[in-house]
Length: 185
Image 1: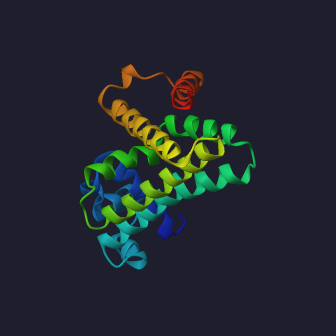
Image 2: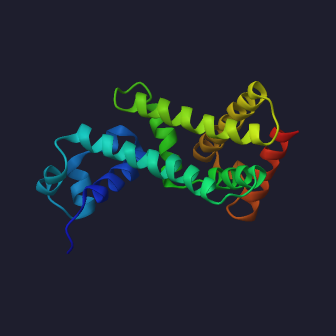
């Protein structure tokens, strides 16, 4: 059996957080899930808060930083990049579901600053895309807020009433295209 890394623990913690919120990030159950000992945990982390901070860093990296970097590296036109972003955002995955769990714990002292920073970073990027598409600054910002609200609403519907949403694949892409068309009209 290979030795677990700090990243392995952070990924397991993020998965637990996505499924059950911050209360689900508990060392002993994670150790059992990872087939590890608590000693392995303490080799990588000082305490549970340190693990939560690592999970939050992973969430920011995978759900925001890497997404924006990949879109910008493509050097595609703004319309293509914003469509790619919408399709990816509406194709819900584990790390996106963490957004809902983190919103539920938005007042937690470890979560609040990271959640606020990620929200600012996401809104700034989408605002930039709308500006590149020719919208004035104030209109681009409003459209970015509407787009982000649609993303969060999609996540909430996915949890509360998943049968109301389109299935994965082409239906999700069509849904993303409809949302984007409304925002661009």
